[in-house]
Image (cartoon, rainbow, N blue to C red; front, side, top):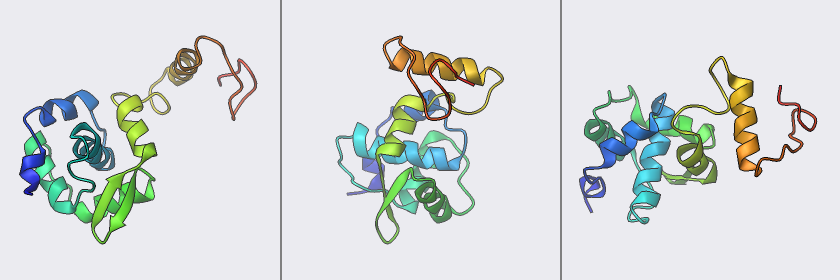
Length: 139
């Protein structure tokens, strides 16, 4: 199966919607899209898939695509499924499905407010104890 067959026309709009901030996040978006959005027609991606995805999304190609995939592996967003093959894992799925677009955990001047809103909405409106603070303490 040709990797171009895996990317149907709405891939570019999916990438635009998710707004990956760097090449590592983009690699996670590509793996998520090819694996989950396409009903696992392709279990893993390679550097060639990443290059094709950059072309289809209108993004600049990473300087060393294989290193970008290894960086995503080191960031725990992808798993290695063989030499040069990478698949999305649950951490990468959560990044793409929940965190992107925008950044709930990092960046922005209203970071504590964003985190508090995220925790409150994900807990049904009830504050709960989080690892870095006491109940109700969102600093």
